[in-house]
Length: 90
Image (cartoon, rainbow, N blue to C red; front, side, top):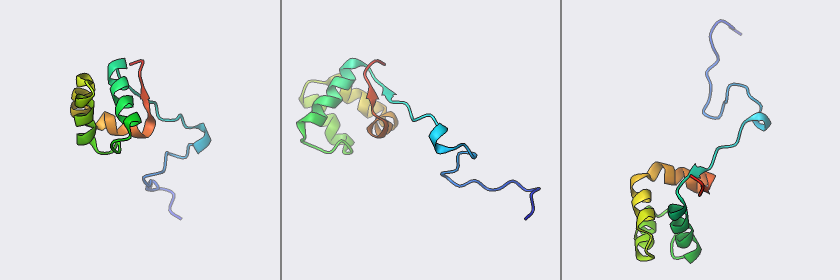
């Protein structure tokens, strides 16, 4: 085996760091009003949280304009928050 060339790394390869020593992904920080709106929509059970446009519409319907605006303009952070969770202390 030729050791002079670097070994290609796959998508899941974190450079040889054992999984148990990796720091878990941080929650997405949002303001308390944004968090409350996301929670109101989630608890309502009227849509899947993956349907961003419906989440925006429901947040508006429930009176959470700040949530609707945040989800619309921060769609990447919203998607990450669905996986990592949201921190209302942002």
